[in-house]
Image 1 (tube, rainbow, N blue to C red):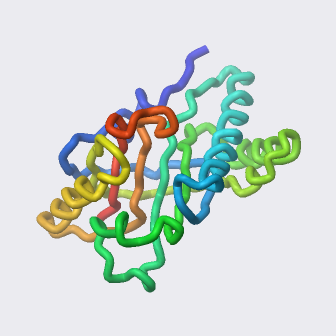
Image 2 (cartoon, rainbow, N blue to C red; image 1 turned 30 degrees about the horizontal axis):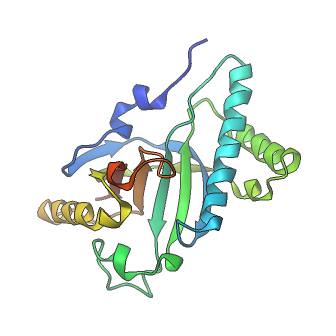
Length: 207
């Protein structure tokens, strides 16, 4: 039985350079759970737990059907109330907007053969049989970012404004405009990796 590894079959999606670059992405599907608040909070950790519980339930169901896949990296979209904080720039947002005000959508990409009904069944099983009620908030999510500008950020999350500044400079220099939610792919497990060694892809959809 061949095990599918999206990080190897779709290297373009899971790699970035330490300088801004423009690329175009195809539509993709994910597991998703949305929330609001500090990423260091208990609620955020519980969202991650619920998301991974559903992801691994789906994985093992397909493995039993002789179609195994590796559960991909955690991802996240981040945004805030732009009516309330409309004057805050991309580079200033991480430091000027309280963490409690940030909204997020955590994501785990799913292979194309995973169907909505597979996700619905997994959600039901995790919520009812494993007693993880928050799993009921996990849902199928489709995203079509199209053109994006991205950069690989190496280091602590609180140093992201430096990399975001490079993205903003690239966007302005090339006459582009932001066209969607800020997107991050966590190549490192931030629960186990030293802050200075963290690797995170930062993406901004553009037009």
